Image (cartoon, rainbow, N blue to C red; front, side, top):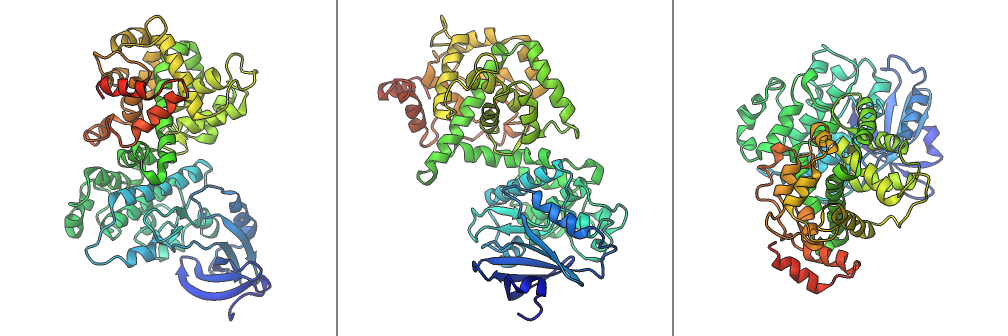
Length: 519
């Protein structure tokens, strides 16, 4: 208990000293009443340029609430130090994990991609709120467990901005995860571009075991040469491209939202959506239903949304996309849609459905799909009317299928043909969707069986298993990655189709018909 401040002694018991961090030391404390472990970061006041207002600013960081952020629990101070307390995670941090890797051992790319998706999700949220990290390293990445499927939580968000706003303390460290412009003193003051380089350096360490050399940054191919060349030769082109895009000069680095949508991470997300296992069948079915509803919405927009109506959605989206990366946080998207649909529950649920990749950032296509679903299916008619049906995917999908065949089926009934859909879908709204959202309707239709009579089951099978082909979910550059991807034969997919159509009055006989239809 030696060294524990009197401001903490009444509530906590000192357990052990962890070590140093950029601004002081790290301890683990045990709460006296509940026995839970807490991480305490001790910040000496002496090295700080100013301590005025620091306590209040640190307390304000408690407002950052995100599933991949380690939220500050409390902040205390005494005469000599500030104390920043947060929950201790069971899996330690990534720095410990990397140090324990045996020589020649590598982390599976899917694990790397899954961790980085979580990291970028946290950064997208914080950057949207103008909060930057400024001191990211593997030690900032906390793991919920020691298992490969651990949840990642990013710690220390915003602390560097408060304790070291001019980054003078940071430049005195030898961290390989600080961007070159900070280490050289050329550009100081935390910002999104600096955070993105640090994420690239962390990704480099994930993939080859060490951060990049200080003299290899800023060259797309340079980071893959020299001592790391052999290690990088074992990694995919998509992983290499991901890192190369981040380790560029500051003005060329993409935003966190853009990198969250990089083909490497998108590929991992799509694989999660279409995969099915006995241990996670419910989540897999939920993902497949989201994909189906999203794809149906994309196909219905040209015939259900007037051109002027789409323009009224596009303009506020463009105004909200202040960094021009084609993406906005879900909170911003919700504000746009609430101007068009007053039923909050309908908007919230529709956005949740159309955020298929679970990135919490949405492009114009996803927002347009959410707008259609909320107004056409959840708040049908005038937007002041109450929700017209329960907000469940299993009930939404059949309703959207019926609407699809009202618009594209023969005599407003199944079946439909690709040729018939192609003739009816060519509207001014479809042209704007292709121009402003990168939807490729010809590509979507090409993914459907050209000569088949499309009934409900066959359409469901192809749209869901297609995993977003022809939409921004699958950028053009990702097509080669998915050439060997899932088809209609995704394991467990028959059960999804059967469960949908049992609720509509179809049964096993209909499923057999679908199979005979050419999947």
